[in-house]
Length: 459
Image (cartoon, rainbow, N blue to C red; front, side, top):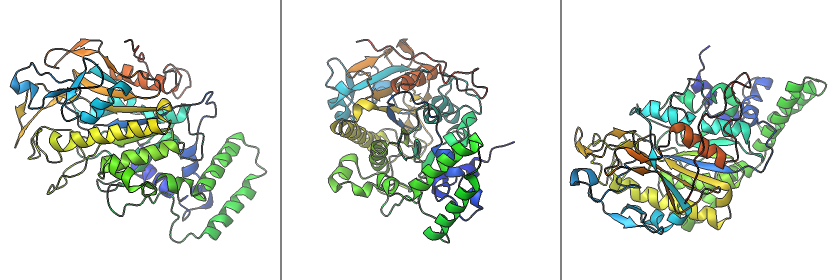
């Protein structure tokens, strides 16, 4: 049977969250509890994660892995700058992250062989070089094994992938073989549906217009009476989840957590008054409120006079009429300084609040860009390049001030310690206190959560 992701996803907590109370009584109370469903065997105090996708593929040469000695057609126009870490340089558009490099671990040897956006994104999401169609994403795995311990969703997705290069929705919005109860709560259906847009509101926890609080409560009481004498253990477990959902919908906690307007104007300015900055601020608020994993698509918004084309900010071929080194939405001159400031603000804010030790920040795209600058349809750019690219980790016990792996003299090939999608995913799971070998296949014992090996960080 084909899964209709659109129907299962649509406004999940939202109108799952509203309990969809316009429907039948039992049907009304199923979806949100499924989203809140969790394996009760957490076993330890779990860490959290903010996983940021530089969707489209950031150029490694212009960011984390500059090559100032390479020919001009490879090195590009940006000069390298020193960081707080001796001997480690980054591109000049990243001064804020350079100043906190002692908190960062940069991987310069990410590598796979698929230069196709949607496939490469599905590989990144699943942590597999050949993901099955029903492979759960990292977020669904974390939701299953380290669910939220508060009355909040375990997994939230901020800003939907968009454009023809987006991965299949089943790869990240369905829960895979773990089921829809491990799918994320999606906020941001459209490019302007984010807290960087004036007047933005999260409507996830609003009831249907024709459902009054009294009517909702009467339905809840009736359901309780129908279930109170049932000894079915599965139904009892569902009842517990329904109670959690009902409490969530009658509490202001979630509404407050999703409301960035609770922050001071100075803090909002610090993160950046654009989609990415405000989504990161929301992500911090959600982590602070007990959400276990927040995915953020790094849609940087539009530059003045830009027209919307896609949220694929980092896919800088020069095909959108904007060159890779230009200041439009699809150029590094616009996007990278804003990403630099916002991610640095997030990491510093987490540290100031005592959350960085328990929160992993991941910054990565599905691949990098070709070393040689080429001519796109209407401007210069760099094309897809999965063989060697960069990623960043910070927090949750990951050692800072560290560069892992190395590329060759043009950042075309990995020279030392290649990192596969499997190994990267295993590293993230391990940092979150999850054993990658944990069995998660539908039969309960065949397949592990991940087949990779976590990286061993040695200075």
